[in-house]
Length: 124
Image (tube, rainbow, N blue to C red):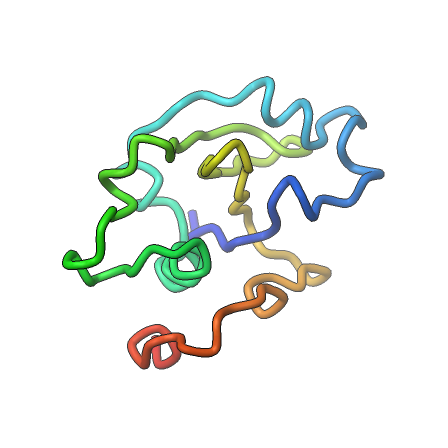
């Protein structure tokens, strides 16, 4: 299975896809918690690092505290979205969903990042 790409978060989710069968609400209700290690095996590293950076974490820089791997307020889940397996992380009660990319996805390029993004993220 290819690595899953960042798709969206629950705040920016299309309202027409929240309460429909197989949509966001069903995905959250059917979620099973997984370890960070399992989450990392299934999601695209670059997309994940960009997301973590946008949330104030600094991937690959353990001097910056807290690191996301040690943050008790972050959890990881696996579920189904319209019948397809997705993984998502929950940070401050917001679900950040990674799924298989399709031709209609805007994907990671739609995310807004801080202008001081480090070179190792821009070049990844």
